[in-house]
Length: 265
Image (tube, rainbow, N blue to C red; front, side):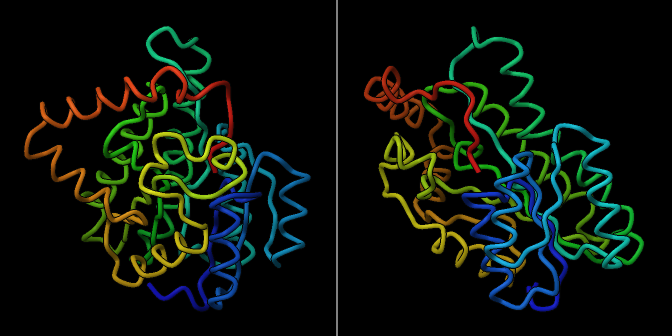
C-alpha cells in the first residue's frame, strides 16, 4: 500500500505511537487521517497540532466504534487503512483483579474485533482494504511482569493472523505491528523496562518501518529486527527460550513489572 491519497483511521492516537503514525501518514500525503481516542481534550489538541480529524471514541464500547467507522465512511466514502492501535498495560499475574483482566481484553483485543467487524463489510464489498493491528513484541514472545499484557497481546497477534488467512484472498491486507520499547511518555518513565534491553527507538523510526512494511504488504511489522531472531530461537528450542526468559524474570520481574492501568499507545 502507498499511503498517498488514502483515508486512514487510527485509534489510540492522542499521543505516542498513534500520534506519530498519524503525523507520518499526513506527511506522506494521506487524503484524510482520522484519529480516535478516549481522551477527548488531548485528542483535539493533537488533531489541531498535526492537521488530523478527531473523533472521540471509547474503543471498548462497540456502539461508539461502529459510530466512528460509519462517520468516516459517510464523510469520505471508504476507509483504506484501519489502524487498531489503542492499547493498555496492566501488571500482575493470575491474582490480577478480574476487572483488570477484563479491561486488558477489551482494549487490547475486543477493540480490534469491534473495529474490523464494522469496517470489513465495505472493504470486502469493494475487494480492497488494509488492517494494521498494533500488538507488541510481547505478543510474539512474552511480557515479564504482566500476564494480562502478554496474554492479550498474544491474542491480538492471533486475531490478526486469522484475519490475514481468512480474508487475504478477498483483497484484505493485514499487518501486525510488534515493537519492543518505543520512546513515548509512558516508556521514558521506566526506560523501557525489560523491553528496552535492545535499545529504545524513536517513534519516527517505528513509522519508517510501518511505511516500509505497508508498501511490501507483509504481515509482521518489526521495528526491532532482533524480535525475529528471538521468535526463531523460541520455535527451535522452546525450553531453552523459557530458560532465558526465566533469567530475565529473575532480573526484572520484581522491579520491572507493570503497575496500575496505563495507556501503552
